[in-house]
Image (cartoon, rainbow, N blue to C red; front, side):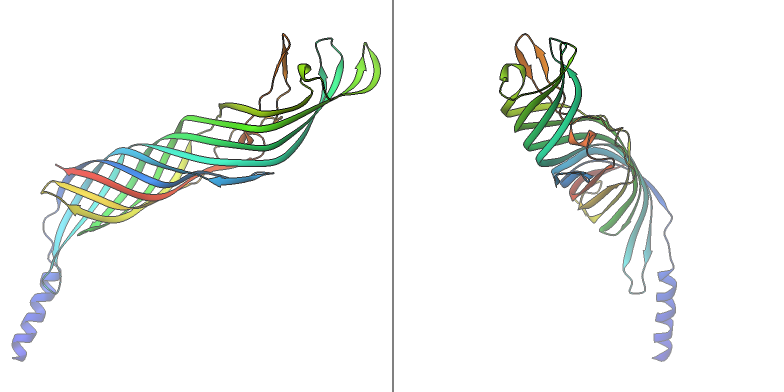
Length: 293
């Protein structure tokens, strides 16, 4: 009996070291993810709220797999792979500024008189949206049903814009020179010239960003639907490694444009004025349909 036990132990140890010949596989996939997907920044004034977004893409993974037998006689499948592809990611964020005062000196009106513009902006809310085209460069390890995927992504902005509405703008003009002479007078109620209080201010435009390098991680389970068809389900996390903000602009509220008796106002994005560092961050759930050849 003891001899039988010893022989079985030796056989089990030998089987656990047995490895089948490595097999190469090519996996093509399409995937969709959703969750917290935002622009990560801090404002010099005001507050930021994260937004919901997601990603979709196609991928290719080159696998080298093997099977081994454990000491209990169970056959375990191991796969190592290199993953790449193309991915579109949508990132959203919101900013809020309750009260912002600015002063723009040395402006000229239509009569070429010099004045300083005092501006107060209340209840300013802004939405930012960015669409990134990313190229993942990642490694994947699969053990039977479970997998982990990690590496880097390079993201290139293909669309980035901001939009604000329902703000209240108050403009007061302090005239310091009229007809070439020193002057001290305030203009507060001449709405036709852009002075006074204006409700429902709207503004929108595009933002300029550089490329983003991201650390990326994903983990979950792989479900075999057919011999060559599988479904992945898991969670993912992307975090920007670099600051891709462009150089800040000077003014938040642009000086008004007076043309033919009509006055209009615009604002620059808070991202181009009140922050110097912007990164992307995303966490959510993902499903991926994969076909092996």
